[in-house]
Image (cartoon, rainbow, N blue to C red):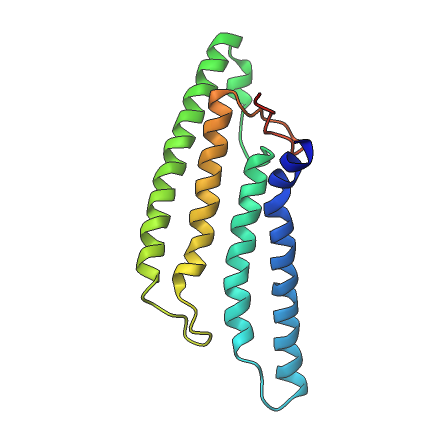
Amino acid sequence: MKLLTRIFLTAEEYIAYCAMTVLVSSVLWGVLTRYVTEKPAVWTTELSGIVFTWVVCLGAMAAFRRNQHIRVTLLVDELPPLAGNIVRFIANIAILLFLLSVTYYSYEMMLKGASRPSPVLRIPFSYVYLASLIAFGVMSITCLLQILGFAKNTDDGQTVQDVV
């Protein structure tokens, strides 16, 4: 069970590493073909842009899960414990509502992108927009689990507790 939990918690990081490898390889191939051959590979720019979107979204998911996004807690830390907990709870609800709304808009954008292919690779833009849908959806679930107490905020990357 612990191994499955660990795999689940780090899956987006492994996928992001693979996407970063594709991104770097694509850019390097584009540079090599531009300066070494007479016919540059025009698809590399488009592929690197698509893969970069996935890397950013997967990285945002991992940072959210590890509680590494920027936040200013100076005022909240100075409040009495009960008031601080209430403010944190309200802030988490606001974050959840924001994430749910952006997830919905990502879904709408993905549906609209299905009929629009990319110029060179002819990949439907819904595959590009799917990255934001997955990222915001998973961040919404993570936030909900944190609010309900099934997940804790730690900086070691292990936020999902075993629920037995």
